[in-house]
Length: 296
Ligand SMILES: [Zn+2]
Ligand SMILES: [Zn+2]
Image 1 (cartoon, helix red, strand yellow):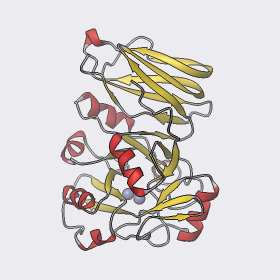
Image 2 (image 1 turned 90 degrees about the vertical axis):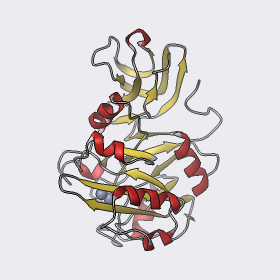
Image 3 (image 1 turned 135 degrees about the horizontal axis):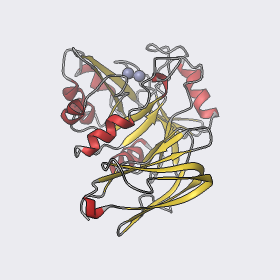
Image 4 (image 1 turned 90 degrees about the horizontal axis):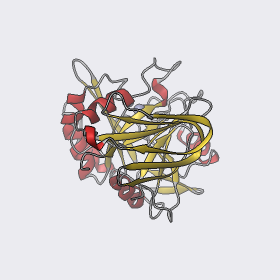
């Protein structure tokens, strides 16, 4: 089985962006121009409790998606949920005093898809992730949660690996959450295989898990055949196969200009999930969605 469709193109996009319409430092027109000029195929402006793009439209060849970020403050953590492809009427039905679960439900009812933002920065727990049913994806990397912008909690892979080891497999995106435009923008993105570059096409691809998160490296294919996972990619330095088993042999494949690697699923040890990671020469990563290997 191939995880990616060899016939379909990949579209590059960022689903989490702020502008001067909320707490971002750049005006919407300049932000849109900046991403389009960098070769992005789609972009969602996701202001706090505000919708900047009322309906999907193209700027040159880049699709702009309606989006929003709903943030909730709890005692021991915060929960920030990004909604993409939402109808603007959503804002009449949500407010900060409701629960995040309700926000996610309203995002879905407004035609959108809900993505949990920066769970490591937010100090979210596995139990919180479990309660947020109906999430379409979680940010495994959030650019602005890195140094020097906002500390050192950009990478949520450990939390998501722990969740997956406890049976909660969540698809993952990487997003900029751009605010400052001083280097955090245009660095984390998703590569998504849609039938067509429309809001509906993107929703369908998000639902199907037909995407991966990246800060640089590119997957070509991930093939699962019997007890083997075979990865093909653009040249990288490391291909890593994370799973719920703390130790397995041949987890890390290293070399110059690696373009493929194979991993044998440890069925006899009841291995349950595998997450494939690519790391390039500059240490930048790509993360495939976790693969459920429990029924083997
Ligand atoms: Zn946030
Ligand atoms: Zn944000």
